[in-house]
Structures are given as structure tokens and as C-alpha cells.
Amino acid sequence: GESVGLHLPTLSVQEGDNSIINCAYSNSASDYFIWYKQESGKGPQFIIDIRSNMDKRQGQRVTVLLNKTVKHLSLQIAATQPGDSAVYFCAEKSGANNLFFGTGTRLTVIP
Amino acid sequence: EAEVAQSPRYKITEKSQAVAFWCDPISGHATLYWYRQILGQGPELLVQFQDESVVDDSQLPKDRFSAERLKGVDSTLKIQPAELGDSAMYLCASSPGGDGWSSPLHFGNGTRLTVT
Image (cartoon, rainbow over all chains, first blue to last red; front, side, top):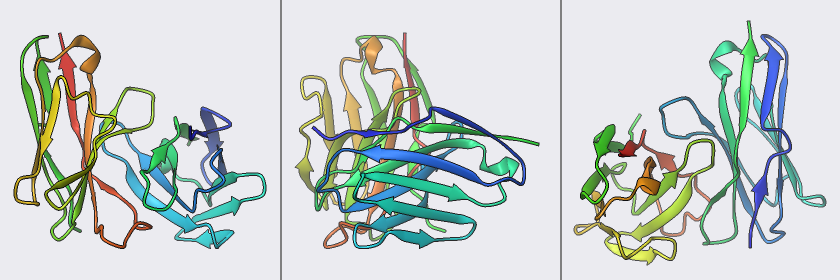
């Protein structure tokens, strides 16, 4: 079966520093990946996505890196702010198959 | 920005009772999903609709769960009878669907179910 896992369940960073959240996936056929942010009591919020024909994609203060060789995905958040504190999920998909979510990493920003 | 609407936000029920959750997806989104999220875990798919048709309900406990999207717009998820282990957040999501297999899902804020 497919599995999407995260290396670290929790991450604490100082406000203003950069954050890196990592994710490993096991399905080599996965071709689409998404990062979601989930605040307490809310649904997951789309942050950024990347297709398997890319290895890097940038958004506003966020960058996603994809390394298909080692089946690794990372989310980089620049100049982390208190509002970035949340649980971050990576999710992966293979073709028209369903989206599979990992367990999540809790990011805490220290003011 | 258009949002996925869900109601109620919270529901407390006793075991063996029936509960129902409602979802209104983003206008024009053909694909609708119901996910269940246990505290501390990632969401897990229960059922996927393409318009009014179920395309995947392999993870739906069909002895007690049912879902419908009669007109291909809003959807209802029902549990009857509820069990203690059903306590979770029930999330609805939608996406444009069709050929948009690589488009992100947009989630509502969920219904938090507590079964006592």
C-alpha cells in the first residue's frame, strides 16, 4: 500500500527564521504532491503543489522541493511568522487515484 | 474567495443515534470528497463523487455510513447508528474534477463529531 510519512512530528522555530518541513513518500508512481496547512479547528488549507515533472516550485514565502530519486518532499517557509504555526500535511497522488495524506508535522513559531 | 460550506460545525450525539452532515462545494466543482480525520492524524478518504455518481467508496463503512449527492451539487453524509469510534472531524472537499486530476482539493472547516 501507499504510505506518506513525515520525518519529524514537531518543529519549533524562532520567528524570522526559515522553516523546513520534510516528507517521505513510498509510491514511486506518485506524480502530484500537495502541501496543506491546518490550523486548530479548521480544515486543511492549500499552500502549494508540485507535479512530478518539476523539482522545485516557489510561492509567496514558500518553496516546495521534490527529489524523486529518494522519494522526498520538503516545504520551506521563509521568514517564519507566528501565523505560520499550524500542522502541515504533505499529500500525494498517483494519476486519478485518491490523495493520500501523511500524519502531519506541528510547526510552532517562537516569538 | 469561494469556500466549501459545511454544517453543523459541531455535533454531539449518543451512540446508536443517527447523525447527518451537509456539504456545499465550491460552485462549479464537479468532484466532491468526504474525508474523516481522527485527532492527530491526516485525513482519510471515505467517499468520492464525480457529479452525482460515486466513483470511490471503498473505504466507506457501508453497514452504517451512507452518502449521497442527488443533484450533483451539495452532499449529505449519514451515520446510522453512530459508534464511539466514529468520533472525529468529518471534512468535505471539492475540486474542479474532470481532467483536473492534478488540481488541489479545497476543504471546508469540517464537522466535529463527538459520540458519547
